[in-house]
Length: 228
Image (cartoon, rainbow, N blue to C red; front, side):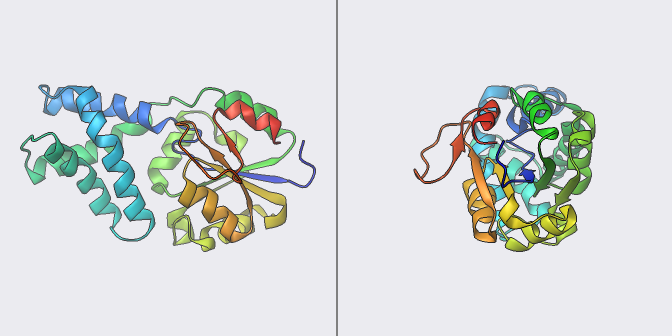
């Protein structure tokens, strides 16, 4: 146990909640209904990097959440050279948000590590996701009881990496930055955002991308036992 840390802040998507897996299941159902000729692996191969790029624009206030929902789908269909109407894109975007939280795959070790940490620290979530969708993900995957507070970007009025969202979360948790640590999958939003705001941070590097040597990182959630 790290005796200086009292509060742990987790990101949700791509950190605890397996966004890519759950997203694939949602799109598989949608494509079967709307565009059954499109193969799911081909679609996801284009969608995943496009979605990541769109989220980066969104978290830096370059596009709105309406544009995020539209662009990531429209750009995916364009990349597949598949013609689709704006009306159909918007319809699928709405359907995707509606059914996405019905899939509840968590990363391997998520429940075990939350069980391990819950009696040693106070646990919280900071997410840039949309409030209603994130609430349904947390509820449907049965992890809500682990967390004392849940901060989303709509509540804070800004998104990670803006330091204001970290200040908001710390205030909500009644915790101090020197006694807090952030765990997330995004180097910019979660790790650098937290470090710039004065919190410690651990990079959940599940995809094993290259990162600076001085950044604490784990490749599997259960590796948190070595740090906390």
